[in-house]
Length: 369
Image (cartoon, rainbow, N blue to C red):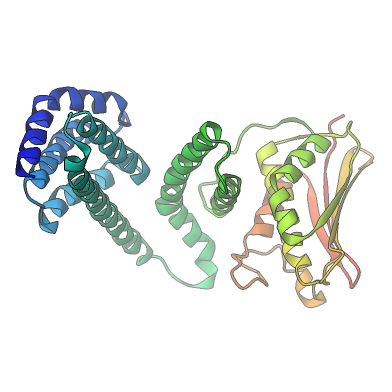
């Protein structure tokens, strides 16, 4: 076994320059990374840890030392942790390629490969844990200076969105992108559609928070859009939620009705209302229905989204568009508030009526003539 370890170390050392250059050409390094010069140095140090680990298993302290260094650099560079994890896994793949190509018998390599994988796992664990710990400390320092009164809750969201919502979105974007790549390369993988659906839902929730924050995001320019096409795309997107909730949705909109709007923002409004309706319909046992009707009234278009779920109580229906009002156990109370902001931004109006038979959200928007 010692002979195999010695031979492998000799092989890796003789090919280390080639290995590191191959890894360097593939790693993700942001141009604004203040520690980008350290990336290769960290790769060299990781290779040294691998060499030592082949000779003799490393202690946790030896692994933590480099992991903590990298974590601090990632925080200081304000680079999302997804980029770091990608580069580490890329290094793992390169190492395994060289190990398997060393020419040594697999029965001699098996335990060494397991040790190398364990080293990478522990290194990633310590680095990500330290990164998260530092970020949490920074977040707590900021939150500690914010008044927790109800009057300032919107200001709190503004402060928090600038410090951690973007931190959520960065790794989420990486996960979404890689998931789509996996879906394209391996279309038959089970549950990938569900994973993408849930990731898109999470991205949607983050966008809601950004709308409420002081730093409102621009989700694109306004343009001419067909309401019929917009709703067809939306219903295709939420099809898994419709099936899961056992809800039938009917659409009545003429193909020539067009609006001048920010597609992503208006889509968010319809998505929020329809998903809320699906949730509400779970309180009835059968015949769960949502009807979407659009009609032209003078120079405006009226969009009605109606469900046959339970009535919204009279004492609360006038407050459903206020921030932080929610009847859901795990609700945030910002969904309909965001909808109202978006519709008003588009010079439209939104309202709701509800009785024991139907609950209807009515939206009017300027018609594109």
